[in-house]
Image 1: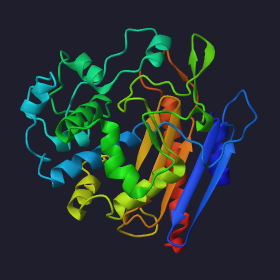
Image 2 (image 1 turned 30 degrees about the vertical axis):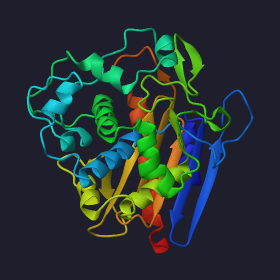
Image 3 (image 1 turned 90 degrees about the vertical axis):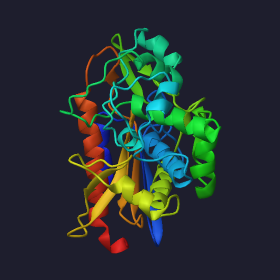
Length: 339
């Protein structure tokens, strides 16, 4: 893992924290600097923005509502979506929203200057409002597409059906039962935050605590240890019923289920690993574990600098995320004896 972390730092990340756990022990290590303008090293207790790990948290919260009979994975959500201001051209289900196969339009480019957008992130309701008039792609040619809009819709559905703010739902369903004391909802602890960076008009800008979209009011952060503990509990059946966990693990042509990516388990001829690529602006992290959650590894990292003025996907960041994913998988494949 030392070699993988140093390669990631050489690729443009400024800080990396790794946490691994298995039945008889755990290990963690920080690499790089918490901030580029300081000499403080990254530490295991430092936090990052959860990014798309929130998609997995939301899947757990939504499936808890399914288990309680207040939602269905395959019931058309037309009326519920209409109440959010979305007119859908075809029936859309919760399974499709969680699996990113609903063909919902993604958030259009923010017309505000990037600096202004970073200082006033969009809440879930505003994200949905901005796509209300956008056309849906119903061709079926590319049904899988990662968007920020699908989890925003799920967040609003969860809040509406639970009658609580999203941060309270996540606290009740995940944080308190698992004692995830390193994770914060509704605030960003600046003293423990790893600083991500980006380019803006040729200048390097600090992204600490700044986001374009913020589904949890006040923001959220988490640690590598809490990422690993959460995934271990989820895969180990401590958060949801077995049928719900199986639904999250089920994939189609793309190795993505309901908030979980799947990869081949090198320790078993027919086994699988499951996890999430937790990308956020300035951050690119991964968490991956065995199918039963007995071994998990999380890599919480800042990412190579993105250009906030650029249009289109950031290929360098995609390659960096894939590099971290490969490092996590290699670690698990090399530690079979720790099960």
